[in-house]
Amino acid sequence: MNRGFTQLLKKDFRLMLSGRFFLLVLGSLVLYSCYIHFVYAKVDQAIYPVYLLDPQGRRTAASDYITVVDGRKALEAACGDRYSVGIDLSSGTPEFYLLSSGAGTADHYRTIWAQAVLEGNTEGQAEVIGSNSREMKNRREITAEFLFFELSAVGFLGLASLLFKEKQMGVIRVHGILPVNRTMFILSKLSVFLVSDLAFAALLTVINLGLGPGAAVLPAVLLQAGILSLIMALIGFFCAVRLPDFKQFSLLYLVLAVFITTPVFLAGQTGVSGGWIDFHPMYHLFTAMKGAYFLAPNTKLPYYAACPGTILLLFLLAHRTLTREMAREG
Image (cartoon, rainbow, N blue to C red; front, side, top):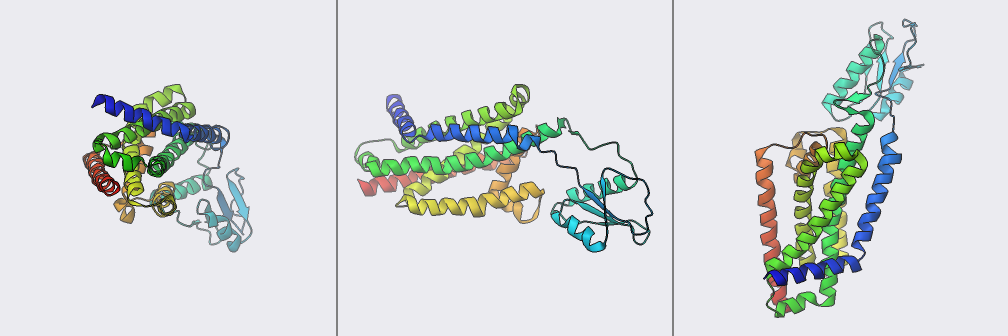
C-alpha cells in the first residue's frame, strides 16, 4: 500500500514538473513580491483628505490637511471618491459631508478625523496602526489578499489541469481496469498540491513581512492556507472529473473568479460585515486568512467545525465521482 502511494506521488510530481507548474508558482511569487516591495508597501495615501467650503472666511488658520474649495458643487465632487470628507461652513455651523464607503465604522472615523482637523487637534498623520507601521499594515493586508486568491486559483485550476492531462493520456481508463485504490489516487494529488501551497504561503509571508514578523504569523497562516488549499483542490478535482473537457472547466473557473471571489474581495476592501456576506462561505475563509496575518486568528468554534466537515464531504463526493468515472471508462 505504501509503495503504491509513493509511486502515485512520484507520478503526480513528475506531471507537475512537466506541466511547468512550479515555474508558474515561482513566477507568481516573484511578481507578487516585487509588487508588494516596490509598489504597494510604498503607497503613502493621505489619511482621509478634508475639503473645506468657507465662503465667509470664518476659518483663518491654515492647515496642511485642509483643501479649500469654492462652492458646494466642488465640495461634493471632491468627496465623490467615498474616501474624502467635506466640511461646509456656509451657515456658520460645521456641516460634514461624505458619501458612505459601505462600512459604517470607516465612515465614523472619517467624520472624527475631519472634526479633529477642523479644530486643529492633530499633530500629524497616523504612522502606527495598532502595533504596525503604515508600511507593515499595507504589507500584511496585501500579502493576505494575494495568498488567498493565489490558493483559490492554484488549488482549483492547478489540480484540475493535472487531472485533465491524465484523462487525455488515458490514465483514468487504465486505473479503471487496474486495482488502484481510489482513496490513494485522490490523496496523492491532494498531498503534492498541499505541500506546494504551504511552501508558497511560507515563502510569500517571510519574503514580504520579514523573518521576524513572518515567523510570528506563520503557524496561523499555514493553518488557513492548508484549509483553503484542500477545499479548493477537492472542488477542482470534482469538477475536472465531472466535466468532459477543459473548455467547460475554464468557463466554470471564470464564474468562480467573477461571481464568487470578486464579491469577497470587494467586501473585504470596503469593510462590509453582516447581511448577505455572512452566508458566503469564501468570505469566512478570506477573513480568517487576513486575521492570521494580523495576529487575530479566527477562534470561532463553528468555523473550525465546518472546515473539516466540508473537506470530508468534498472528499467523499470526489471519491464517489471518481469511482463512477473509472467504472464508466473501464
